[in-house]
Length: 152
Image 1: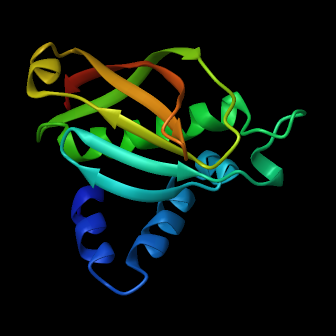
Image 2: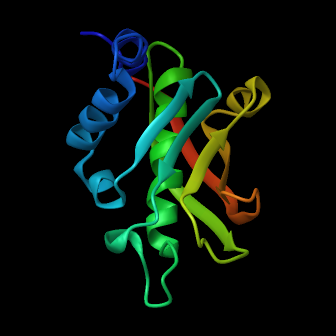
């Protein structure tokens, strides 16, 4: 079976491939559909999605709800983990520490990043996550903690 990363590379090379992959990712992980994410980057040590500012992602003050942003951060982390996890290993998120820094009054770009040194710490792998609004202001930042172990 093709890996998620292989599928991403194949599909995104086609016209409208990024939209198609975003839809498929939402079908595989239905909870992410609630944030209406659009996948914009997937590669080893980096994942990126956009959470749009729309009625279904807004809170009572008209900004992207903090939990919708966290959904985007977790989706970006999942892309990174799928592209980075060594063969014969699996990953599970075991915690998330985030700080809400500013209002998300535009679409937010959610990124997840690691280094090879982070993965060398396995089984505990920290993933740096950040949500940024259109003007470049970081609205949410933190760490998602992964548990990476060999498959049996």
